[in-house]
Image (cartoon, rainbow, N blue to C red; front, side, top):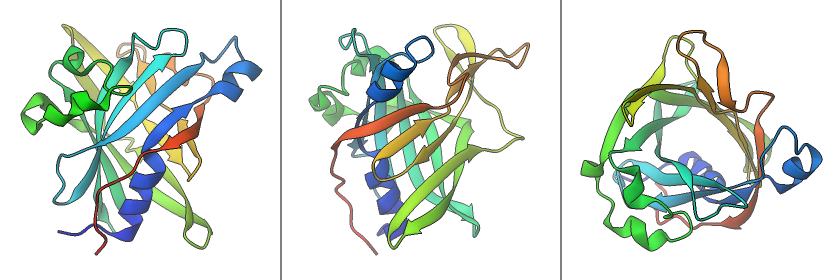
Length: 205
């Protein structure tokens, strides 16, 4: 099955190497200088574009964290034609560092992933200019993205805005008892700038 041009555009916008250098320099008390990799992987290729995401503090690039899988696919509603389904790795340590060393991703299989049913974003888009978009990904208010990690129940709030050159991450950790954010984009989104484009191996319909 071929993929729609709009889905391929989204994949191209999200795939790449990013950092938030300008934001971290302007507001060092509130934003850590991070590097983020979102690399295409050869999974669910029949109807999706799938990426491995990982990030690291710029001063500790050898200690990356937040490994996750993002599956971009067609949505279920005409007014939100795209969606993102998140997965977690059963053994995140097995692919630690794959952002910088993509050779580690060649052996990744679907069997190594756990589906996160409540971790789904729906996307809308604004056309800024011909074939130039802003994609806005939001989590439904009646869903809860939670999972077990190292014996602890973790709840997160997900969301992003993507353009051809920028990626704004609204991801936050949530205290399940108080509902308050405990880490991440507490004071506003992390503003990443794309430094390198990663290519997708897909076909348009």
